[in-house]
Amino acid sequence: MALTSDKILVVDDEREIADLVELYLKNEDYQVYKFYTAVDALACMESTELDLAILDVMLPGTSGFAICQKIREQHAYPVIMLTAKVEETDKITGLTLGADDYMTKPFRPLELVARVKAQLRRYKRYNLNMVSASELDVLEHGGLSMNTKTHQCLLLDAPLTLTPTEFSILRMLLEKKGQVVSAEEMFHQIWRDEYYTKSNNTITVHIRHLREKLGDKAGLIKTIWGVGYKIET
Image (cartoon, rainbow, N blue to C red; front, side, top):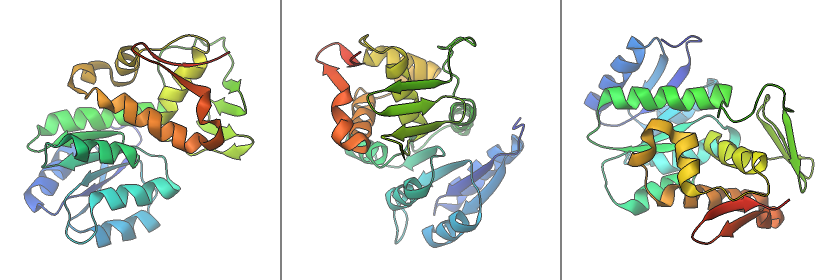
């Protein structure tokens, strides 16, 4: 059950799906803010401190992609996209805009609940089981400063807003500074049981988004072709 009654935004114009998702989430003691339109969802986002959002891509008027983009302008909580399409471009678009995960309709409600729990664990605890308790909470390199306890990241002393997935990837690279980290290792550490369901492009998209946010410091993340990624010592 949800220990802190996490607040979850659910937006889907298909009422049956939205109502079903709400039912399953409430059974886990989550607080659910359910809306059938983007306008109502955007109003809720302005007045409510949320912990996670589940967004349908195809909405009348404003798309789920636009809502995701709006969230990322101000917040770092996880976003899961729901799409009726199977095209890879839709999934990549969502990830590029800052989504942390996606599910294709039709989906199993229990699998969605499992992914919600996984995203919230990562967002709230940031536990990759990679750093021992004796190690420092602050990772620094080339103008980057990451506090793994407070989930704060600075680039040249300016706040760097990262999604939970981006934070996890950058943290892994900083912790393994000087070593090549393969996409397979990233998959396993970040998504665990979902490893085999993820697209090969998922890590590539998140790395590209990270580099965009790093701007002039994008070169800190090196691509080792055919092997993986690394941050030079």
